[in-house]
Image (cartoon, rainbow, N blue to C red):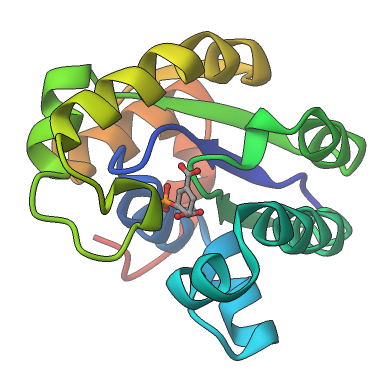
Length: 180
Ligand code: S3P
């Protein structure tokens, strides 16, 4: 049994796309905390924010983290705010997980998120400024929460290779057949 690999970072940093590919390459199960709680609640993240507010969403997110931390051998893509709650970081660590910060420069995030229509925190005027403010508030907290920082301002394939090299997972990945 192996501890979970947890991907944290700002919205648009590639946690889901990198996580899916990393899971496939290393033979792990992939899970996205947002999709997990959406499935459980039968509501989208946007609906939860709109009907119950962010505070309730954070409680549901923490519950999802507690549940997922009890499992093993997964790649878990967090939401952008998940590791900002210290209890979530503790739960991930207590479950034996390793937290990776996908570090993408602010300008690239602003570009990637410019047309987003799903993330409730971004549906405001002056999106570039909203992103900049949140990024500045959060960047230090992502760095502190993580065990390892990954330079993620690159295509998914490259980022996954960097993670596999950094975690020394190459031998394990090579054993998996059919994963090119
Ligand atoms: C959030 C990020 C979102 C989602 C929610 C709140 C955040 O996830 O959890 O909209 O606070 O940064 P992604 O990072 O996958 O977009």
